[in-house]
Image (cartoon, rainbow, N blue to C red; front, side, top):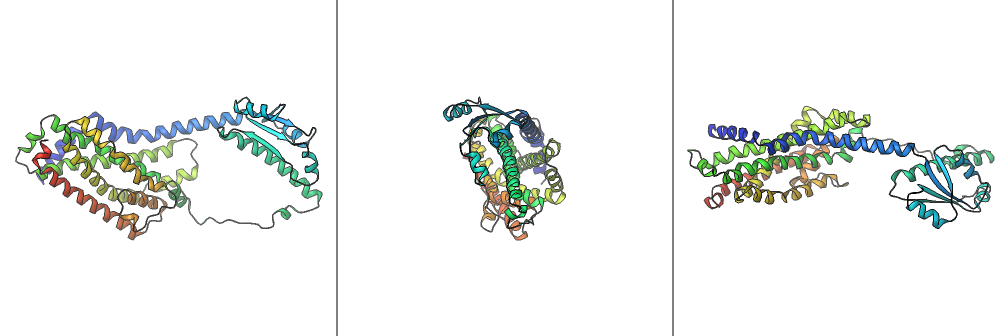
Amino acid sequence: MKNIVNIASKEFLDTLRDRRTLIMMIVVPILVFPLIFTLVTNLQTSIMEREQERPLVTGIIDHDPGNRLVTFLEQREEVNLVPVEDSEELERLVRRDSLQVGLVIGQDFSRDLDGMKSAGVRVYFSATKLTVKERIDRVLDVFSDQTLKERILAKELEESFIQPVSIESVNVATPQEVLGKLAGGFLPYLFVIFCFMGAMYPAIDLFTGEKERKTLETLLTTPVSRFEILVGKMVVIVATGIVSAMLAIFGLFVAFQVTAGMPEVITSVVGSMLTLTFVMLMLIMLLPLTIFFAGIMIPLTIYAKTFKEAQSILTPLTFLVIIPAIFGLIPGVELTVATAVIPIVNISLATKEIVAGTIELPLLLITIFSLIIYATLSVIFCVKWFGRETNILR
């Protein structure tokens, strides 16, 4: 045990001196989410504010002069009407962005409106402009509501006449459950990736790097068993992966708290999730998962001759980690006995249930035990692989 501690301490010091490892393990996880959330939120807010303040330049073809809709639109400050001759020109101007939206009013518009019928309006817009259609719909909805109220009064009816069924919706899900089910799958997707990336560079440095520096053979000649050497190095790899994942979670929570414009219900729910129970459950699942990752990486880094070769071998594995992690983002995929035994998929779905507060203890235990089994198998494979001279001295 003393030898393992000494080897782990020595490798920890060497790892902390490596700039690439420190950046991937500490700097990136802490800073990436606050920066992304701040930049995206500020950019989105700026664009939305600019679009809302910008007059809605609306081309109009009026085949029914003097109709009430044109009069209504002329009184709206946010609408700037531009007469257009024909629909082909209108479509061309909307495509070229000279007009934001176009309206074509038919010649029977006033007659249908006064005859209590549906008066048709054709709207030309570009779906690439996300807010334009929403803005013109709001304006037309106001006109439609006003016309509807006038019709109700003209018929001496109550407003409830047009709503024969009064529907009262009762949401039985808490805000935490809603956030967990809708966005909870995003959380494990992030920390699984950072867990893998945080462990990758130390794994390459501690095995392939030692081979390049010609120090691995020297280490093997010391009066320490290969098992102790392997465990000591694996401790460092696992620790860096867990630290990277936990810092990524911490960075995500910080991003939710400091980002301006975030809905209060989201920040309050996210803040309430950062509890000792949540952190402990994450650590219990992250530990065997990271050991499993280390068990995959170590044989490959031992096999590689150079740092560049090891990096080229391990980098494609990121996609094999991303694909099962994405299952947590797919609606309808739930944590069951079957999914609880699939590595990476199980931790992704289990974390979503934990965030929502709906995790079932039997499924959580199956998830944890399956991860422990996969971690154990990977360690056994590593021990056998590291025990072969041909793999080390390749």
